[in-house]
Image (cartoon, rainbow, N blue to C red):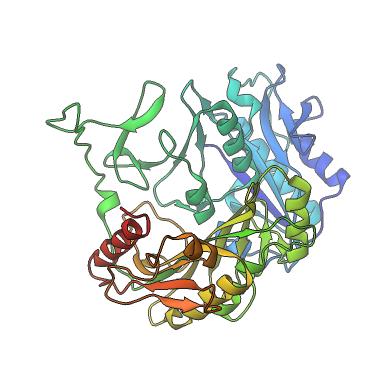
Length: 472
């Protein structure tokens, strides 16, 4: 397994501290840079990286080290420095551990995992070499084939780190799939799950009983023809592979935890005075009573929540799209991913948001109509879907079966209602009529979906509604 070693320090590691860390392999190791000099690497005699170190990140958001590492960090703000050892090279793993131990010793703080950073001594690496592989050019990628890039992660939560974000972009540009391999017990951040593209990309979980399986579908996998792919079950045909499900994937326990999932899209007229993020903040305030705690372009989310900074970032990157992750306070777990895109229709914000609730905590479903009205009347809402799911309060995605959520409501924005022919949007096959939101002359419509949480009737109502609105 590739080893990520993370140092959490109360002050930024200064150049001399980083240099002391880089001398972990002795004074004769080659040093290189990549990622516009944001990543420093210790290399073998052929220039191939043994260890890659990301530039230190100032974290100003409470709860991120606990959420992603289960670690206790220094008081806010603190610095987060990641070192990634090259796969399959024991000396590289020790280099990363010694680098982290030296940073923690000189700058104060601690390392994760603690057992990786126990020695300050120079690591003997004479004669150590890294196998030549195209993946060496991308620090997050461990195996590269003509079909997929494989990333091996051994941490409690696979997060959308700067490393992994770079890997997503690289495989997209190369038109490859991305396969993330983890040990059993690891979970995904929702930010990673929401960003993982379709086939052949997948989450591959190591398993004692079945070898490997897909952490999101449960299909038993084997590495064949350059990628992890489902195995064929007994009696397979060209039309039905009859892929078996991993036993571990099917071991499900109802803990009483739930998530309120909200996905919506807004389309704003392009304007120099446009402020982005207001729709998400409004939803957050309506459903939790407080604004988001922080945001960032990767995890950990390191910046305090700021509409102005988010807007400035999107403006600077335009016409390229902007992707960010937004988190809530530890007291009310919440996480959103936001994609901002400039289109012919204006500036679009696509938001996927979830809040977690434990046993005895009631999701604020009575606030949904008011939340929808705020979006429809103030933030150019195009559409919104709300679901209630049986899922973990901490929002982490486990390699276990999680059933579909129950759709609670669908909302159609005022402009979309106006473009519907006749009274199609107002007269639907549902048992309850839609609720008009906003001005009577130009309303948005809120469609309650009173499905039974014990079955899929809510989705049946939703599908009937979608077919009706499309005129099918």
